[in-house]
Structures are given as C-alpha cells and as structure tokens.
Image (cartoon, rainbow, N blue to C red; front, side, top):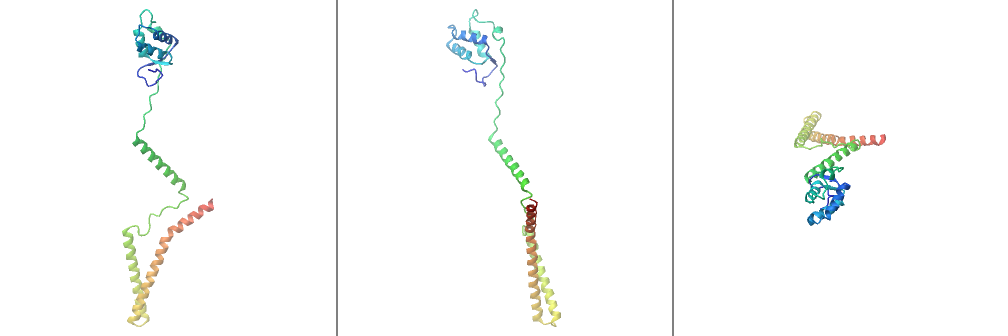
Length: 205
C-alpha cells in the first residue's frame, strides 16, 4: 500500500532517517509476517507514512530489537493535507452558466444602449383597445366630415339634395384622407427619432 497517497485515512507523519532504518530492518525480519515486511519495505522508500501502519509494524517487532517508540518518532512532523474541493452539481453549474450569460447580455446591452435605438413599446394597434379606439376615431372623423360637407353644400346650393349628398361624400373622403395622413405621421415619428439619434451619434464620433 503506497504511503504517498494523500487520501489515506488517519494521521500521516514524515519519514525520518530513524524511521527509515527501522522499516528497512523490519522488512528483513523473518519473525514478521510477509504482509508486514512488504509494507515496511514500501514505507521505507516513502517521504510520508501513516502513523498507524508504522506503529503496527513496531508492535509486531521483537521487543529486544525495536527502538523505543518515543525515540522512533522523534523529529518527525505531522503532514496535513488539504481537503478535496467539493464538486459542483450539474444543476448548480447550469444555473451559474445561465447567470453568467444573463450578466454578459446585460453588460452588452449597457454598452450599446447609446447606439441601438430603443424599441418602441407603444406600437400602433398593439392592443385591442388601441384598435377599437382608432376605428371609432376614424368613424367619427368621417362622420364629421360628411356632416360638414353636407351642410356646407346645402348652404351653397340652395338645399339641393344631390349637391348636399355630394358635399357630404366629399367631406367624408376628406376626413378619411386627413385621418390617413395623421396615422402616417404618428407611425413614422419613432423612426424619425431613431434616425436623428443615430445621425447625432455619428457626428459625435
């Protein structure tokens, strides 16, 4: 059994010259078992060895040939090994990886926030409420345009039913064109802002 293995249980000490000589002598002692002789030979060539194994060889050795236990271990030092680091579980590794990616994504967004235009959260027709509101607004504008055209032509053409209806239709079309023009302006405003901010950044660079 190799004594250089740092994972051996029990107390580990340094092998001094006195311990090495004792182990070499024990490896040739026929009164010991073959297992203990092999162990003594192995420990004699090691830098560190378990205290229990050396003591077990000393206990089986003859009383008249073995040195005193105190003198045998005199000058030897304890060997302390660092505990094996705990391995992270796969779940923890995956969680740390996701947190790292999230932190890198946030850092990247922080770096490019002045370059890339912000997404417009208030996009037209993004909700049913906006769609219904826009529809009612268009209907009201067209109806108002019809009434304005109808009464304007009624005042101009002496209550002629045909001309009154033509004026109402003309006002309706005008209201539709006006609403379309206003819608185009509202939807293109965010793009104009992003273009102007990008041009300012280029000038500053």
